[in-house]
Image 1 (cartoon, rainbow, N blue to C red):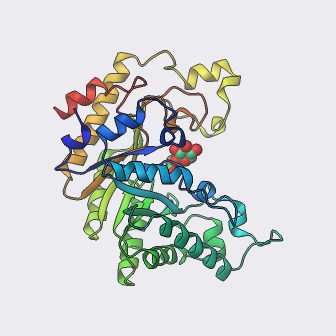
Image 2: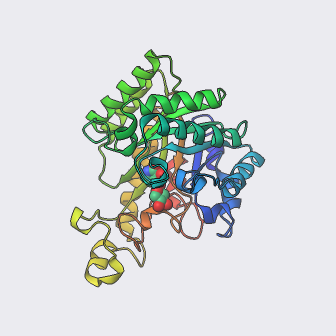
Image 3: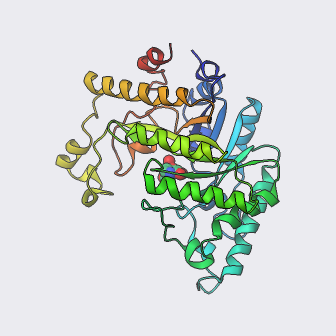
Length: 344
Ligand code: XIL
């Protein structure tokens, strides 16, 4: 069973690859990826801190490998991401003396970064997440150095620069918790605003980091419809479904390896997933995939944030050392039996 063939009439099926996976340090993963997926995203290696860690240094070697692997297998390559508040080095916002830049200098730096990265991948990467996670949950713009230094038009500037750098690629806005009405509304407004100014935007990426009981899929559906109504394409860009309890704020970031009690509380499935929880995961995935299929006309791509449970950021977030089961392939790289049931 090959996912990409099974869903060929519906949408592209993608995966995000880590550096170790790109460098083929996880035996079997790249072969599986070539068989199963027809779109790829870099989990980290195209983010600013990785691809452009210091002013004069661009690290193209690992992302180049990803891109040539994708080209070899005829895959739709998605760059992630040009502008984000995370995984962006401090120097980006500072002059040589460590003072915060003025608006014009930061815009210039952003444009240079975008030109350089898109120039490297011209004709090879078909689409980019131009701006990632710009909104708060209440729909206001997230407080970031981008916003503080440039002002609210930093988003449109990023889209303009990307389009100027490469007029042939698709440009996306990407975010999480887009099922929340206030955030949904803000993104719809952003899309319409870009459209009314004649600035290219092709799609909205709904990340899709979900859990067994979160979020309400009716609200996800409302967002698919709301985004599609603006005329852009909708994508699910970072799908995974966690089975783990979500720790309260006080415990976020705690190193649970230090504390056995916490470890048991927040890492209950270290020795395997009990069948009743597996059942819930199966049901949840069925509902999610059914939703994608229902809206296949609007959805261009479904990308999973990883390949197999052995390597997923969910094992390390919001605490390190957890044992999660969020993806379609298990730790032995086998397609989970419930996936076969869902799509047969
Ligand atoms: C995550 C990666 O998976 C981790 O390896 C990294 O340590 C942090 O970033 N939203 C995004 C992704 O847009 O880039 C994030 O990826 C997950 C949340």
